[in-house]
Length: 305
Image 1 (cartoon, rainbow, N blue to C red):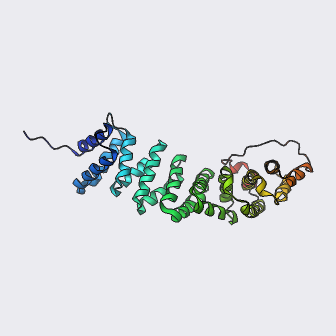
Image 2: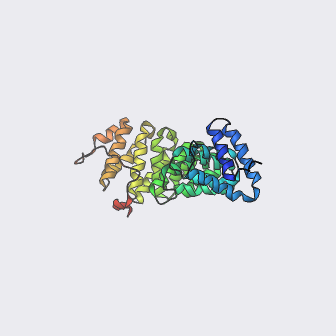
């Protein structure tokens, strides 16, 4: 009696079981997987649906990570939807694998999906999307991260995008530095917060630009941006030499968190001029080191209402 042909699900499960048993490599599995797609050219939707079902309810001995990794290696546009699902996975490693898989496809659908995920609720999804957009699409990716992430009204989303720009290298850093000559105070705040995590990235030649941004933030009464800039300038220490007085004037500001941030910035800079300005400061009732979270609610800050 002739052997019954395997169902589509059985073919796919058998392939993944071979990978799990190390009978074949994941790379060899992608060849078999693409063969399955070609053999079901008129039923590609069913192939995708079957694999997505395996991701939701993996059979024994098949790991979800293996499924998504193999799909990413296949570089087949048919699997774009699967990679989009994997991008949102709660496991960060799977999310990164799927983001890279989308970048390897390099098509408009993949790019648009990564762009949309710049505002995902999960930090690791936003992070993977921003990092991979810039890595995969270069200057276009930088522009997308700036336009869709750094311009977002929510602080945490902007901060994630700003970090992706700092990590990406020259093009991303240059784009982020340009924010300091803009009128977008929220973006300035997030750019300063991100650079504070990588203060060595910002050179002394950029201090005049930061000082200009500080003046603009003060003029706009955007204290969150003012505090973020003061924190960055403080982290840059001796690079700020010559601009200490721009900071010192804020020790008389009529909002205590700004006064504390200005005092702490000068203390961190610790140049002879900074120390001199601190020594003649009229001691406030209480000056203490205060951590300002990038997630500080602007609704709690009456200067930004």
